[in-house]
Length: 116
Image 1 (cartoon, helix red, strand yellow):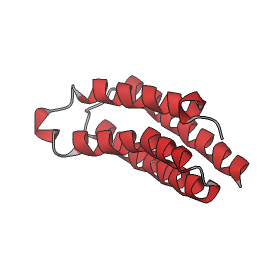
Image 2 (cartoon, rainbow, N blue to C red):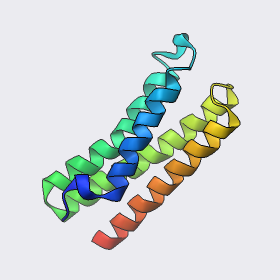
Image 3 (cartoon, one colour):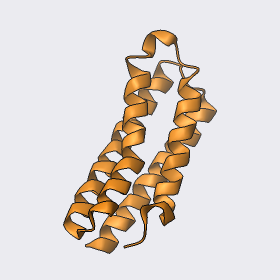
């Protein structure tokens, strides 16, 4: 198994987290312990679980952590919809982030399928 830092899906998810942090800085401050915290936590979970699963060096464990990362993608996708509905994100930012999270999820699916 490749080192997690070499995986394109890990690299894209790190960039995604950075973008989430930058954009959520503009959310209303009263959301600090609400949507901001949730979307940041879920987005951080994606590269973190890829790294942890890869470091376990067991295919079964790796698959489990990749599935958790994929679940976090669904969480983020849901939270992006909520943020857009609340007008915390512009249409442009929402579409970009949504496209990115769908791509990351598809990449995770590909990695999961290749390990099975």
